[in-house]
Length: 68
Image 1 (cartoon, rainbow, N blue to C red):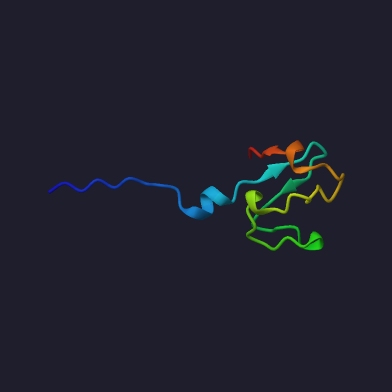
Image 2: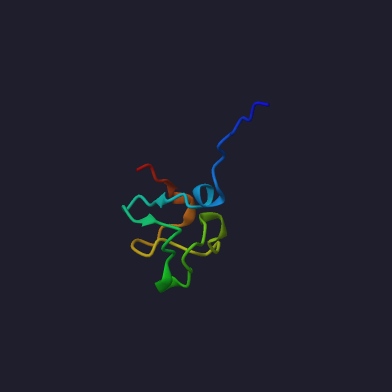
């Protein structure tokens, strides 16, 4: 019998995508945004619609996926 193992990303790898603002701020889901009521481990998709960049006030649609 042959066993084939396929690696799939775990849920933390998928959810923990960082996002970058034009001002340089990086939203890291692992850290959240405590000062603005966002708990650690809050994925981008679960941020409140009214959340804005804590540095410059840019809205969520101004951010792009952060590439390390």
